[in-house]
Length: 458
Ligand SMILES: NC(=O)c1ccc[n+]([C@@H]2O[C@H](COP(=O)([O-])OP(=O)(O)OC[C@H]3O[C@@H](n4cnc5c(N)ncnc54)[C@H](O)[C@@H]3O)[C@@H](O)[C@H]2O)c1
Image (cartoon, rainbow, N blue to C red; front, side):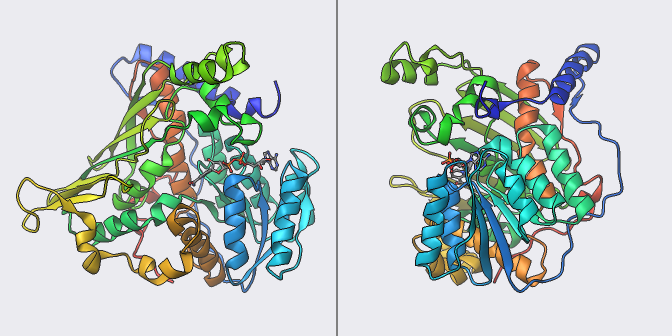
């Protein structure tokens, strides 16, 4: 098995946990399975770090998404890209060329194999290591970065296994380093406006949210979009919600998860798997390894999450079937509801009692004059042309802004762990007839007193 095929690995400790979870489930039928009984250690909370003038940056993984971030960082004041690392030498050279074209000093290139990022972390004086590699490398790279003296940021998800989520939290706390998961959907205009409206009480007391990653990825997973086809091996080896954070992150922020409330438990179920095998057979031929592969991941995974304070979240992962993109994006409270995902044929909708005609919807953006998020107003011109409608630029900018000003990052290690761990927990629930699985409390009780996220500005 190549390293890339190992990308979808489940760790030995997770197998042990799943094994014992089954045992507990059988013995205590009807009670929630505790996914992670973790010994309590002193928790100083999220990293507190003073301001820095220049952020010396090392970037690892400059494929589709990493190169987009790279382009953003070239445009942000106070960033010096010191080093760049990828498996593929040409990709590293391309980034070095872009840097020279931007009139900046060429970063040192690292491309001597899968562990060369460790050499980069050891050799270079870095303030921040940013990874946009395949999922299985996110946690190992961030841990290496924090241990060698840098803050760490990653593309989504922050980790693959439950054990890795704990490792991120413990390493961040031990070394007082920021460990940030870059959930760009939290910086998109409708999501930011909904967050702003939530903070202003427009929806009343929040009760329910619905989110999803509904994206036909068959062509990407089975084509050449991902270097070495790394993403397909997760669908072959795992069954659960493999990519929960785009749909969940913005809802979790509105609901103050890990900042006043926390995820309590979830239940999850998957359909059988057909989409990838059918698509591979039709498009690659019946003898292709991806047509012959057995796919473990059900085509549609559906989960429900309950929070300690009684809120519910419905979450879907649906990436192997023909369908238009959607994140559902629903938030509902005692005074109203919003839902929808903007594309060519749909728009975000809202219904607020007293404002909207009874029993009808109106476009969310009707209220933009009053509720547009100030960060969007400040940054939309600057972010024009950047990936994902400018959201990627805004998130990169905010990360650098927080580091340079000695501020807490918008999303910290607890959010990275809370939103990411959903994958591992859904895998346990799916494997156990949808039994309830408890969330670990990564904050170790601090969720009760942690400050809710405020309205961000630059
Ligand atoms: N937030 C978003 O909207 C969004 C969109 C696309 C991708 N992503 C995320 O970005 C990440 C990368 O996805 P992608 O589409 O860019 O994939 P990709 O395959 O295009 O890029 C991954 C890169 O990592 C490199 N790499 C692999 N192993 C490495 C190693 N050991 N050391 C150094 N480099 C290594 C590969 O050569 C490749 O260039 C994933 O986590 C994905 O989920 C997020």
